[in-house]
Amino acid sequence: MRTLVHTPKSRVQVVDVEPGQYWHVGFIHCIIQQLSHECNIPDVLRLHISTDGASADKKGIVQYWPLQIRIVNLKNSKPLIVGVYRGKKKPQDPNSFFRMLVEEMKVVINSGGIRFKDKLIPVTFECFIADAPARAFVLQHKGHMSSKPCSKCNVTGTVIEGTRHNVFLGVNHVKRTDENYNFRTDTDHHKDMKSPLEDLNIRMVTRVPFEYMHSICLGIMKKCIEAWVLGKFGCKNGKLRAADIEAIDVCLKELDNTCPGNFTRRPRALSEFQQYKATEFRHLLLYAGSVVLYGILDDNYYLHFMLLHVAMRLLTMPTRSDNDLKLAEDCLKLFVDKAVNLYGSLFMSYNTHCLLHIVDDVRELGPLDDYSAFPYENNMLFFQKYVRNQHRPLQQFALRLMERNVQHVSTKRSDSNGIIVSGISTRQCRHSGLPESSIQYKRIEYDNFRFSIDDKNCYCRLKDGRLCKIVGIVKTSQSYCFIVRTYVVVENFYDNIVPSTLIGTFKCSQFSAESTMIDITDVCGKCYKMPLWKQTNSLNNITEKSTDELIIMTLLHHGT
Image (tube, rainbow, N blue to C red; front, side, top):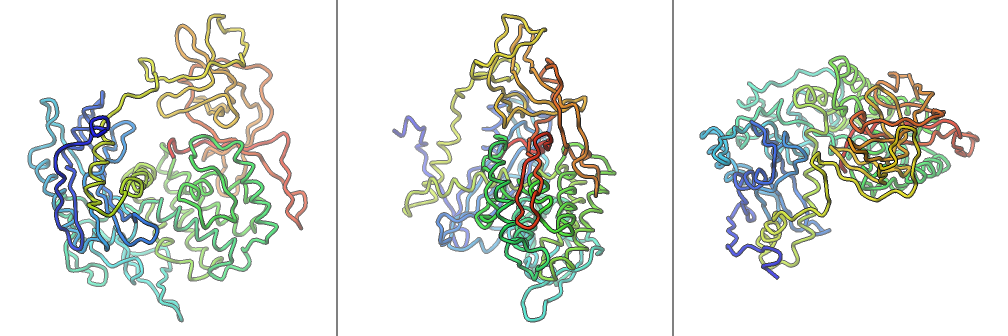
């Protein structure tokens, strides 16, 4: 069995890192192993580093802290675990935790890069990604519950009377600089110990972002729903009635019929929000929220939510202008400024304050998904899955990880262009320009796109701006083509903050009479089709779908 699963025979070496143990996989080893399976290797390797705590059991008695890296300019690259700490508490000293990784990285920096196949490839360490507690631990500053937790500016929290909570008011604060941060002169913010990131010359203000999976999806979006559903933070005017919640639940349930395969978690009822994962909050934030809340949530609260929705779509778009960033910044400042009157002072937590710095991070590092924690979270389940018992658990994990890293041959077949098709279609589409010898398929994968002829994965946007439904996937002698029907009437869904078409949201109706055949390279985006609901009874919030209008929304992410 050990031979079949490629279990290594070498002994797993662990070292003590108080108050637990640490196993170092090897930073250089992981990079070389990944490069050996790549065809197109970039001239420079751009690396992101991340860490976070994970529990191996529901009680959280034992913690695992993996160190992960990702080559961000390598196509479809996934995070690599380069070291793992295990203990009953988190590591006491971040410098001891990072020591072996920092030593390896210094070797790479001093030698000018990593040598691979007789070529020296330079390496740059671009940023460090973590949630608020892990970020404070590694940067060695006061935590998010303190009065001065922000590593981006000099804001000071105010304690709410009768509580121990700090709130952070205002939208204009003096920003910190990379040059001054390393001196640790702000004793109310910094701790005495230096950060291990100093040894890697990672700029600790501009290159340690507030990533949006934790701060916005699990932070702000969850808090908004807590206020709408539970009336939390003293939010009375915005609290939804039972009939309101039921109406929204009906809409979300129906979205399961049109939600694309890019979402691994299907839409769930809003009444179940306390069990939501980060991807489900993202689904509401970037996509469904603007549609299912329309006409149900109080107008003031809906417009306030739309400020966040518009800003986050602008910041997640792969291409954006300086004007887009300025618009997103204005929306977020207005969101923070208005939040205290709508939701109360307790809503103004550290996560709410972080919204003021998100745009600066995007200016420095690119779209939000380029440095989010979503890819790294996928590795966190590995600890619960593969550690079977408490006898030498870190060694167990090490062996399972090394087995997983053995590359197996893919069962999918692709042509020389990396295009994968599957399922011969029995529903043959007819078109005047279609040769009789052509083959029609049910599904196709290419680049980062996955399309099929079912109603969940067949909507797309073309480079010329047209919105289409794919009714046929065809292979001709020259290339792969789509047979599409185009929407004739395309207009804004809303224009109260910006025209919705600016952020890839369209209200559509009426298909073209004739189908068109296009090359697959004409597609620039995949889309999410949603019904447009109308409230037919404002007292009981009975929803009714529009029969001739629907919402088409451009997807802003490809994976889970």
